[in-house]
Every structure is written in C-alpha cells, then in structure tokens.
Image (cartoon, rainbow, N blue to C red; front, side, top):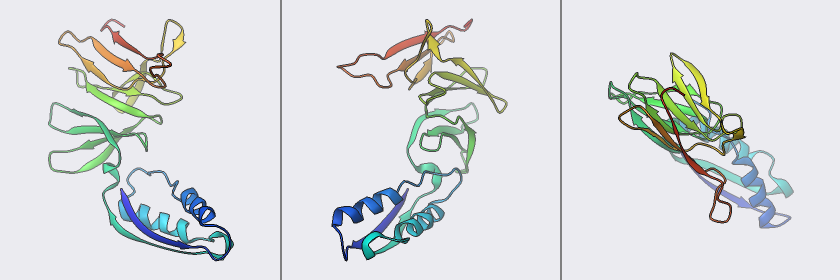
Length: 193
C-alpha cells in the first residue's frame, strides 16, 4: 500500500480531464517483491509525466507499507507455524515466517482467493482467474489443477475451501453469481478424485 498526495491544477481544459489523466496513471499493478517506496516512486513518475493541457501535477509519497500487505486474503498456517495468504492483485501466495520474513511462495498467474493445507503438507488453492477458475494443489514448487469444471461446464471461480477430518475438500464457486443470477455453487472433492 502506497499513500500519495497529489495536486493537479488545470490551466486549460476541465478538472475532469486532469482527474482522468491521474486515474489512468494510477493503474500500476503490484509487482512481487516491489516495496512500497519503489512502487510509490514509479507512480509519482507516472503522475507527473506530461499532464494534459499544460496542467501542473505535483505528487509525493506520504507513506508506504511492504508489498506483501496489499489485499491479503485466504490465510492458512502450515505445520511449522508459517502464515500463508494470497495477494490476489499480484497472483501471489505469500509465506510469512514466525520471525516476520515475507516471501513469495508461489504465483498462480490467476486470482488466488483461498488457501487450505492438506494433512500431507501440500497447499490447496482456490483460484478465480480466467485460465484457472477452480482448485489447484501446490507441492514441491509445482501446481496441479485438480478441478476446473463440473459435469463438463467450467466453474465460475473458486473462492474459499476447507478440508473436513476425513480429507474431503469443500469449496465455494461464487464468482459472477448474484441474487439475480444465481450461478455459483458449493462443491466437495473426495480424496479419490
């Protein structure tokens, strides 16, 4: 998370055109392992570069937090006490050690949303991206898609998941579902597939 204060003053044109310029330049995505200050500097450069209509735009960083604290979701602990969570903006699964060291554990390339550890130590991930919209298993640095469709139809996008005591995995599939368009579901995946 980067907090930036900026001032945009139009000389010609409208304030809305200046706001559009600023909004277009705030589209910098989170980059894994990019700290808040580095991201902030990149955004400040984008904000102040060539504003339209001769406007004057000034910006400065007023605060920042580490890259891994943006949009955390889906926390799960492993057997060693490490905390895992997703940073869905960067497609990253982050591991935070008991000592406070954070690192990217795995990047799904999609939109990871929920995590659950199997008793064998492998990590199961609910993902609601475009290519992966189901559940995958991460073990030994490799990911395997376990389920991406049901009865021949693609899932909408898995969001949360949990194991019961017998090893059955339950997961929700709510993406793009609403009261007016109830297309989501709740599924279970048995240990034998």
